[in-house]
Image 1 (cartoon, rainbow, N blue to C red):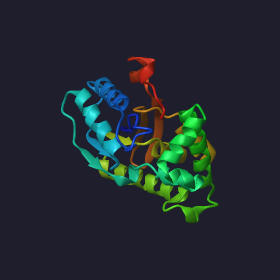
Image 2: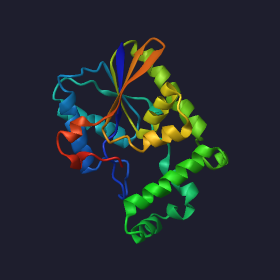
Image 3: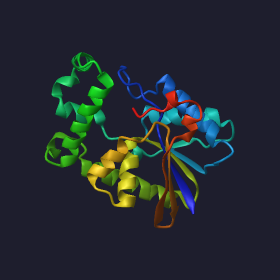
Amino acid sequence: MATIYLIRHGQASFGEDNYDQLSETGWQQARVLGRWLAGRVHPDVVIGGDMQRHRETVEAIASGYRGAFPDMQVATGFNEFDHARVVFRFRPEWADRERMQADLAATGHPAKAFQQTFTQAVQRWVSGDHDEDYPETWLQFKARVNKALDDLVSWANGGDVFVSTSGGPIAVILQNLLQLSDSRALALNEVIANTSVTRVLYSGDRRSLAVFNNYSHLEAEGQELVTFR
């Protein structure tokens, strides 16, 4: 059976004007992953969403890989959902970035406070009770991701594939493979580490989860490289 390697992007730039770019830690994480993959895996195809953090993750992996590495081809179906829109629909006042930063700073634990709000915002989106508030509903997001995987399997034709993507699409793919509830899929999303590798075996229409959320390459370099946001 061939393998699809679902790779969550390196750490993005939380709190910066451009969240979508990798942080310095994110670049380091992806270079470490590239070195770890070298000699172990030889992808036939490399796919990524068209987000900056997806592209930069592949660039950093390739620099660490230090060998022949396919150019990344774009498949927008593997893009993350619009997390900013989801949060702003729950907390409209946070569309003002300075207001959001002030509110978070006032808690004394900005990252933890944001995560709590983010979880509530996603639950609102997933509930389906406010679909008119979102350009892409939860059900539409799931359909998009699963179609992207179906298209990839057909197109890859039995080759090993790297996919640079985000936690949301990985969680949706696992939900479909394992027949999980929405709540369990969201719980998985919260523990997917940056540059972790999830392996899906496939042959024709058969697909099986082989490995979930492996980030041993980061642990080997030091616990400080292990991040989840």
